[in-house]
Amino acid sequence: MKITRTLTLMGCAVLLNTGCKKFLDINDDPNNPLTVKESLMLSPVEVATASLVTGGTSTNVTAYWMQQLSLNQQAPNLESYYITNVDVNNTWSYSLYTTVFQNLRVMMDQAAAEKRYQYVAIGKTLFAYNLAITTDLWNNIPYSEAFRMPQVTKPKYDSQESVYNVIQQMLDSALYYMDQTPSKVAPGEDDFIYKGDMAQWKKLVYTLKARYALRLSKAPGHTVGKQADDALAALAKGFGGNADNAFVPYPGTGTGSNPWYWNTGEASGGVVLGQSFVDSLKSRQDPRLPVIATKNKAGEYMGRNVNDAPVPDPEMLSAVNSFYAGAGANLYLATYSEALFLKAEATFIKQGAAAAGPIYKAAIAAHMSMLGVQPAAQQTYIASRPALTAANAIQQIISEKFVANFLSPEAYNDWRRTGYPQLKPYTGNTAKGIPRRWPYPAIEELTNPQPDQKATINDRVWWDTNN
Image (cartoon, rainbow, N blue to C red; front, side):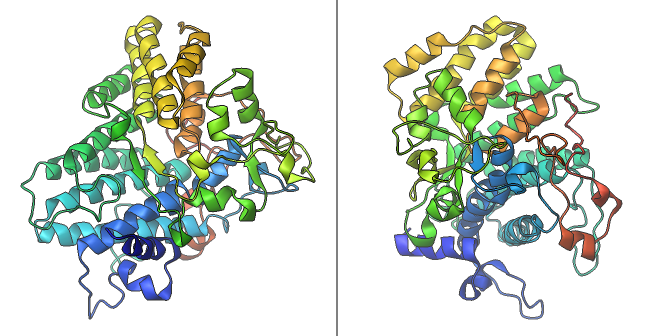
């Protein structure tokens, strides 16, 4: 795909300006419906998933709460857990339910009618991915009645348990459609993630199935052993190397820049690295530190503590380096290293620490290789890490996975699920610990009032039962 077209499509997904509106609001006039090629819908939705969701406000905020990032501003602010129902309006009503979900449904319905099954398969994969992010932030959400306008104007909220059942069913359905005879009109250059390669998409689907299986390891009505079995079965068909990583590439010009370039750059309002994250890398002499972080003007790596006053000179703090926050950096949706950490955890649950140890080491090495760390430095670091034991395995696995999932929504999900890494929360007078979820949006409370909306940020989602 020519770079100019790439930028146009990215601009549609990210900016949704008037000129691009017809790409995304497909059924603007139901009496005169537009028919838009699937290729013109897929690209913007992939970029929206990366730029507005995985690299958007939701991950930005939870990265503050996980102390990977810090906001060098006076509290109260998002980092100090001051988040309102107005703050989350855009993520819910624009990024997810309109730009992603509604347009994926249009694309899938149209593709199914034309027997363009590969578009259906990709659509279901992306839908499941975004649906998981939505329910992980808000718990119970509209799904079964959410897309039945105008017949249903106030859709009910489905339980998170039922939504997770839908997610796994949707991924299974994606696998079914991937095996159907390809149409002459099939994804190619319009698919930024895998260029229409269904074998690669299959590996992503199986890796996601494993991710979501372990998500429910402590959920009511589920057993950790069964969830581990399900994860291992899926991972056997999942990612096999860094070449399988799922990411959206950015050309690095204009609106085609990686969202973290804007979220953490000079115009971000003071977004820097968190102190606990930087200090943990420094204390372990982790060779990934210079890849992840920049040095301050004194030549040191320095993060900011959420409980400290703003630093007058922001150049005394470390920022996110170009691997993750360069204008042309890739934005990762799922990686081989994550797959190996999932496998290490599931293997520990089923077979113990000795069996999980080599997989855990391979997971660290996979992330280091992705970042370009030299093999000798990898080996030195891995040799310095404690051997896994029955007592420390989950803590060690999740703490290392936390580094590999830098700027990923999965860092927050794993912290809620396992309690690792152990973090010291903001100690302001109104704080009740690190939030366990997002508040429901104001626009939803106004237009679709539901009992679920009484939940606060300190209430837990259904699967979050860790003490």
